[in-house]
Length: 94
Image (cartoon, rainbow, N blue to C red; front, side):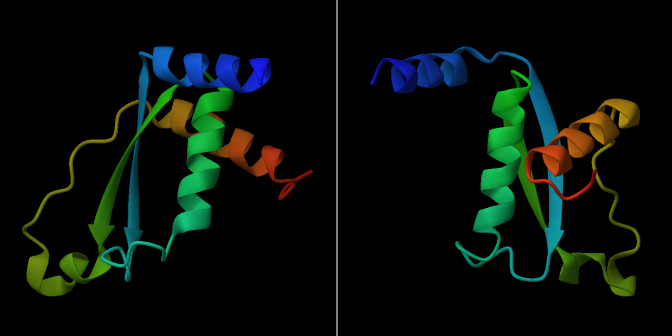
């Protein structure tokens, strides 16, 4: 029980955020990307970050919406390091 409490405290104290945009066809369905969301949450916790997840419906990215601009993505190198940690945690890459 002590480890769970420590994990909960660690999760609540994470002040620095990592912003991720998840583009998908079924973002309106609550459980469509549950495993991806869990993996991102666990990865953020592992690197002491608070996950801010933005869902983007891929239908909004069709040619008729070309004028629509996505929010800027900052620090691309840090994002790549974060994704690599996610993959290593789940043994996707060596």
